[in-house]
Image (cartoon, rainbow over all chains, first blue to last red; front, side, top):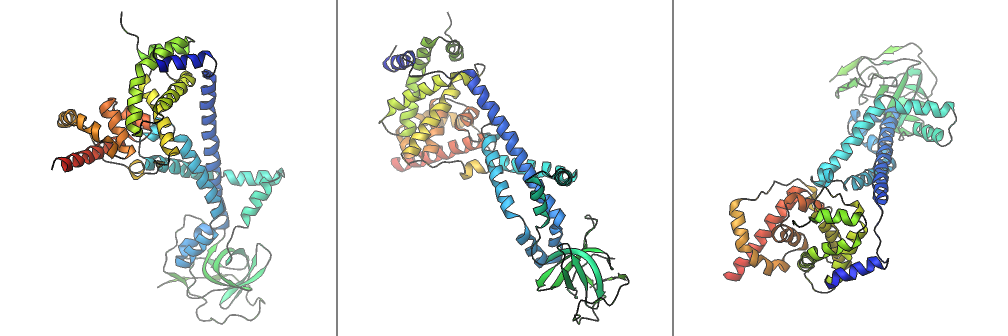
Amino acid sequence: MNNLASKIIQKIKDGEVNMQPRWHFVFKTALMMVGIVIVSLVAVYLFSFVIFTLHKSGLWLAPQFGYRGMMMFVVGTPWLLLSILGLFILLLYILVSHFSFSYRKPLVYSMVGVVLFVIMVSSLIQFYGFHERMQSFSEQHHVPGLRSFYQDSDQQRPPGMVQGKIIGVRAGGFVLDTDSEEELLVDVSRETKMPPDVVISIGAEVLVFGERKEDTVYAFGVRPATVDNHRQFRPNMRRGDFDSEMNRPQSFKNDQTEPVLVNPVIE
Amino acid sequence: MTERTDEEIAAVVQAGNIYDFGELVLRYEPKMMRYARKFLSCQEDIEDLVQDVFIKAYSNLQSFDTSLRFSPWLYRIAHNTFVNELKRKSRFSLGVFEADVLLPQLPAKESSDDQVLETELKGEMELHLAKLAPKYREVIILHYFDEFSYQEISDIMQIPITTVGVRILRAKNKLKQTLKKLYE
């Protein structure tokens, strides 16, 4: 036996070098698998929660209202959650990259694979109403932490985006009683986009996208709050009924109580 | 009597016969020394590093699946040890987000012409390996000197198989250019 081999055998005999038992590696592999499962679940939970908050707040509808809507969407997106999600996806990639099915293919494939997996499973979870059930469970059973987590998600709207009930319809707009118990005047102009056949009537729940200045929201988009989300908005549709009377009312006193059918004008 | 395979010896060591590990050291010491010398392009600490490789191999031997080939498993340990040494000396980038690892590459396959060329070039390659960047140097050593397949190199370095092919091709082109300049 040569010098190096003798040296190593001597070290082994002296107990300086020990062979790790098999269970150590089995345990390490199991730990890594559990890690992958946990990180995947957290990533899926986070992303589906982001989808849930975007749906719940109605913010996901904002990009339909052009550039300003897109900006509102960008501002209102929960970036902190998405950043945390990004870290989990990176962690997931690092864990998965130890397996030959991952590193034998270009890195970009594994990354796209991980991201697609998270998006698909999250969408499926959102589709089956997981978070709605979680929210009602947390409210019914007063689960600490979870309850406030879901309640906070209700207030994830950027300034200028309000939801509420119409309590008055006036020339040039309507009066909205918002979810946060404010009374706001919604200014509707030629620039305001609405889906076709939307009924602006007292008692209707609507989502308003606009620029807020004190107690007035200058709307660039209005959608029914209980909207069929699959209905697509055609970009050039304009609300026309308020066109002739653009003078904003000076008070919030209701002067019209009958439902108004707003016929969209296609320009 | 036929010689025992590396995998058979590894199984015996796993079962508790530590002395047989010496045989694996004897078999692989020259290859490891050559790999270390060429990959690290230096002489210092080579013996200590190779000893470190064998000690790690012994410690982790229970993780080795004896139904697979022993040499790529040992070279994987050696690769990690040598890369860590290069990083310690700040001469090697992490390499995880390099473009050839990140993006898909067109597969570069070997041809019979290549093999003739390789035999002719092998001697020259050895002389000029130090001029290559570590990432190119390593694939050349593993493929031409230690005769690993692309897939085995992929497992040793944990990089995509197509990247192995591309790096070998680029390394050969760089070496050819170097030789061309020398003989002009």
